[in-house]
Length: 93
Image (tube, rainbow, N blue to C red; front, side, top):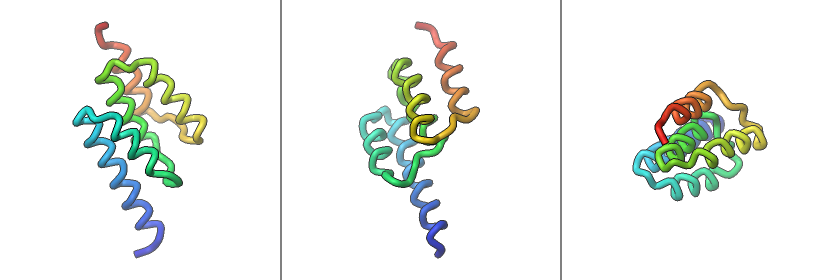
């Protein structure tokens, strides 16, 4: 197996785990996994999963801050991130 294939598999594993933890409403552990990713930079989908987890908890401000964090760390927001922001803005409350 080539090195890039192994790195891609690890990134997919981390993203899957973060998605599972967010769906289980265990956002703290999901954020820990993001930190463990280390040099394997999170991609837009990773941030979208975390943003959805924050959205469920009503963390609108934290979710918006995450978009700025993405840009700071060199991850350009994509349509999936803006979809999460827009879906949250339409929620009552």
